[in-house]
Image (tube, rainbow, N blue to C red; front, top):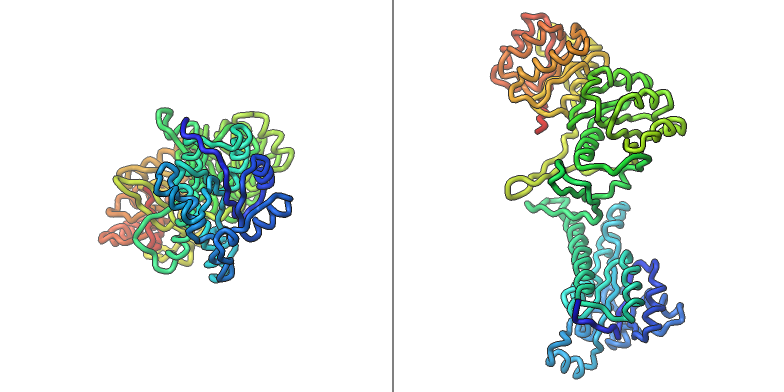
Length: 508
């Protein structure tokens, strides 16, 4: 750590004044001359500390309703001057410009204003011009200037001022500059995204300010980080920190459970539902969800869309699970669930989720709209002689919700609002079907009267033939194959119903 700089002059102009007072008093104690504007100037003066108005430095008042206050050579010259350049120092002396060694500036709350639902005029006025310029100037000249661009860094600055008697090291200034450029780039990204809503440009921009280091990635030899605010999404009541794999499963669980309004419990393993049921009461939903595949449920992620009571908690507590998510828990339920310290128990908070999905791929990123469509009975077009019954349509709707959130190629069997079995992620659809039949039989399910849903069309009639022979009475598929009629004919031959939806639900 070298190139120490003593702070002699500071420019302070902030929107948020939280925890600013101790810094003002410390700068005053160190004999630092303070320049300021507007509300910050008043704030400092009210603390009984001497402050020089920027307009007294520039000989120009704040104009255009406050849009122009600090944009002046006497301000930016003092920030950008290179102390090691004799020519810069000579010009400062020539034009009577003070060296500014510390800049404390934050930005108008643009993102917050957009999120509040404010009108366009208010939003545009929250696009900061002077603040962003001051931040960039000070960060650019970090060799000589300290830039503090967030109230979150006030405590760190105060500690440095006290410990080092008002001087800073090059490493400290570089770190503050790094934080400042992060803030400015995030700010510009959100402004761009606001303007990009009407006619989106073919560019990819994302900026998330909060992050959490994970224990590791998918495997222990991989590093992992979550970018986002998990505390806003979940209130963790028990257990260790969520891992990378936990988060992937939790994301899938949240997406699946949001398809259901009646009391429902889903159990997921590697992002696929190994059990799900909808019932009148959450305890019954749990018991029937677990019955789907109690073997795969071991170490899974459990999610419910209704409060977990003590009776349900006692049943859940009988198996080992990684994560349990619900909107609420009774006090008695928590006493049961918190007895095992490593099991993660989360309360889901009402947070608006993104409508886009993206991931890195090859040498770039792919992005798409979320699949927010799921077809109900009204969108099911019966194409066979036998028409589906009301109960079959209900179960087809249930199965279609599950199929949408299961890895392709996938087949889902359901009856009475319960998953009976699924074939997941096979390279051939008929293999997925055979896998589902084996699983259903292994757990004692009677497929007679059950329904089947497929995430994509049947290229051959073999799937419906095998399904009918297993007891399936109604089939849902998107349709669209040039050989659709072959499958329809097979359904007619076997005396089962088929509906098409026109919507495919691949999930890779």
